[in-house]
Image 1 (cartoon, rainbow, N blue to C red):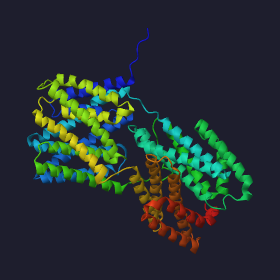
Image 2: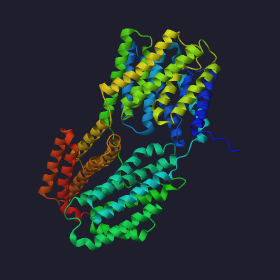
Image 3: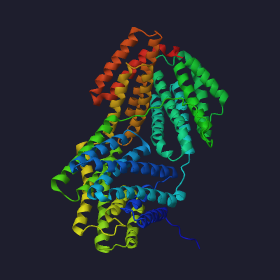
Length: 624
């Protein structure tokens, strides 16, 4: 007789519930303050892959330690509630601003530090004699939750295949080589633009996920530089191809024979790379590179760098250890969105100041809990593209969780102090919350329902305030979420369109600054612009299905950067002309004007790129 299978969602719910209750039991046994923090942590750190599980746990622990110290410091130096609110607002502003400038789980650690500082400071304000016990309980609860959750779920969590990223990158490289082959054959412009867009979108997605995909693996982190070098070498090839393709003299009608042969060889190399994932045909490849450097020096030089980046990554991929780390072929500098980071910091200050003013003016006893909830929401959701939409789902989930907590504490277990009975009452809610996360319609609010249930239910705490005060506390927690929704929707709104506009503005400023930069500064600006173009593509995909204008505008920005660099090289060699200097001057003026007219940014980039391409064109065949 065939045994019935258990749904994976149920198994995940069982493991998560066991981890949460075991962490709660240990925290209660150790008599920690607020033992339910351990259960909340055990649920929060559960991840789909082992790497994410380990690394998220690490950064949560670091953020908790730093935030606890900050919370204690705020209480020691704040001489009045107003000073405490001001210190909390500044602490949140610093953490949120930093979290919006850094990437991956480091950003998560900064947000944890922000929230923990708020929790310790506001909890300690109402219980000054318990301040150090609260801080210790918070840190110890985090440690317990991490250790228990890791122990219970680690061996049931999948390892992400490290070859998945390599396969995507090699296929993208093969598509890039095929695109170059098509360009030499002078294929239809629509087909060329479509393949180029596919390649750019793919490498943008890979680059955007590489931090999370390779989390928790030291050896893969060592190879991250080589992977990004390949990504940006491939982007540089597309950029150089567009620059060459925009000039009228390349290719010339007299070059039909060698162009056809070179395109055929490139197509063969691309096919071999796509099918086998390697560059084994060394003789053919070397012949292609020699021919390309001789016929089209700019493309040849770029293609050589791409091949070097790919070989470096493939050669070191399957080693148990990366060995001696070779320098990356391509410079990588991250995009830092200072504008949005500043807006996020200011938003946090305003939200905390508003809730703090309400607390002080009304003397509402639940004001600190509302401040805690608002601090968590304005921190963690500041890096999302549509925080106001997500927070509406969070609010709905929080309402369910708070209602479930009221039902347990006030109806099912009134006056019950036994932690065992409290833990048993939590089982159906935790399991339902974890199962609900597996379904699209309920996924967004399910985790928040579970966490708010534990926050308000407070399992492991013998007694809670009297029912009226207890109900006030639950309402205050929901009020903190509502304040965050208002802040993100009306105070300083954020959405993908605004982030895209911010990226375009940053790109234009980078390009404008290139005119007066030295060679080193120009190279850094180009590298930063390349990362911004990829981030722009990732952002645009979240709200616009027509990526054609974004792709062409981004490539135009890269062509402008490459043209300015080439013209600088010509100027240093005194090989340029007065016309080229005038073209650079006009381009800079056009870019400066585009900064004042955001609606025309993409069109301005393409127009400037076309003018600079024409200025560079007479010198392309002589560049080495």
